[in-house]
Image (cartoon, rainbow, N blue to C red; front, side, top):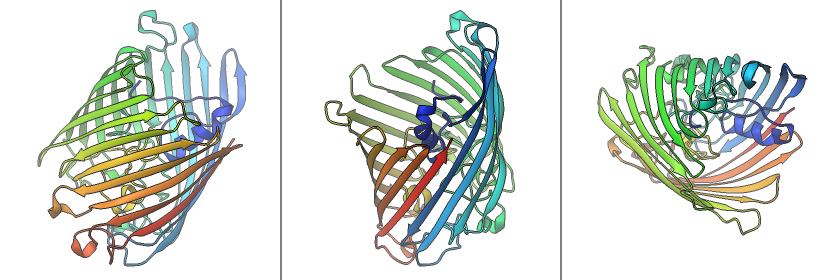
Length: 444
């Protein structure tokens, strides 16, 4: 289904699931120690930990806290929690979980000034309950009625508009008003503070979902959202229509005038019955107090299934109008899904507004546990009076899974057309930025 909440998984999938959950910010299975496993239910103990080291040759004028130079910094987190399910009649289940989190940023802080390197924080990461119907309603299919509520991650489509509440600013930006404890890139605290979701329909055919989301994130102005979704899915393709209404915000934090923003979206994706083909597109129409905005993308990909490892190549073009509000976008399908550019999408900008972006994604598996990837971008600003963030970026990375470890080294080159004096964000120079990072996570 397009918008979903799920937990569970197999021990053999631990490393892959853990990397997806914590590095890319998508919902999925976490690794666990099984405490109880019986006919009446199950209980799991989850442990997740991660650390990353980064270096950037250049800094970026986003917070007003940076000057020309290079920065080296680190991030880390630990998560510990319990989740379980109680089996009921007709294969229905009552389930829930709770997770605590400790996180921090160290060293110089990041090159945009979102964090200073002195952030430390603890939080209740997850606390949710839910119920799924099993086979109680045969006409709806398995789990054709689902309800969940609490502190949890919820996703719309592939994260073009709603992926997670992962923005995590530090203690110095905006005088500390936006502080959420740092760990900006890893974003391990990525749940909405309060939610309720009810879904009618299974994973195939017609289904609908209603949601209420409340963010307690000061960097997002603590918005409250209502979401409605109608979708139809088959094995070959899926289409969905969604509506998002920002019901309220914290007036003292709402610098983007978010209250009252309404977004209508139409999305389709699938292989259209052609093996190895992937196509995806979405169009979003947005009504704001300042006028009407829009964003859209089209993507096509091909998997070379006859070649060793089955490498894949995808091309995507995306467009975001001058003052489009990108809401809670993020990575869902993999690295670079909607955080576009490891350097640009996190620090230099653009941040899915006032931009058009060409993107090429190449993925080359080299066995069951090792793969290599290339991400290439060309960014162009639309309204130059709002900023000149035209640039190129190329990122190379590897993913290695061994035991309970997930290891991702990455290196990239970012080349802006303008520096901060010319309306860009890179401070003091238009020269390229060679940056690098190393992420290591462990779970059991």
